[in-house]
Image (cartoon, rainbow, N blue to C red; front, top):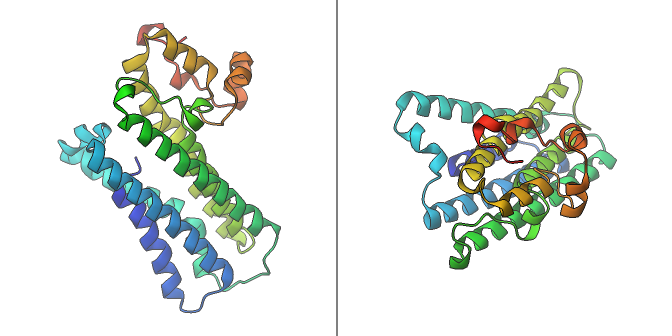
Length: 256
């Protein structure tokens, strides 16, 4: 779902809200720089991926249907605006409390998250570009420990941006938490993991090796396969987001 225009819109919003303020403090500058780095990194990666692999097949149907395409662009605008809320509110605020633990924790979360996301993206790109891996699913590097480590990194860094914004928030401004919540819901239930899981199941679901990989690899939170594979189903569902949505029933070509 994270197309090149979407990532650049994050950059535009962050810079624009900072510039319109006129006078800036350290926290505003840091959060703006973090969002700009993330947006430029992701945008350049997506552009490079499009040049190498072509456009995302998930959006072929939308491109041929003006109604769906319009809904998609409106939805993307709402997504960018809502996820950007923490940095937008911080940049618009006149409050400038001293740097505290929440700032540092949020910045560290962002750093860890972007490192995971960038590493996972690069590992998958290299894997897909290798002729010897044609027709295989990526199970190397971070992908050995999570089926979607790039999404884990993205969620972690945006929750970090929210945490770093909290020293400034007051009253109704705490509603900016809806930004990372929306992103989490989208990736878990709508156009992130569900689409990719369905696509992978259709391509590899009848292969025993893939079934083993899926049963022993966490859908999001990185864990050693030996640990994840040994956990009971109820624990995976309750605490590790192994949702029924990712594992269709017998009538839907299951992965069991």
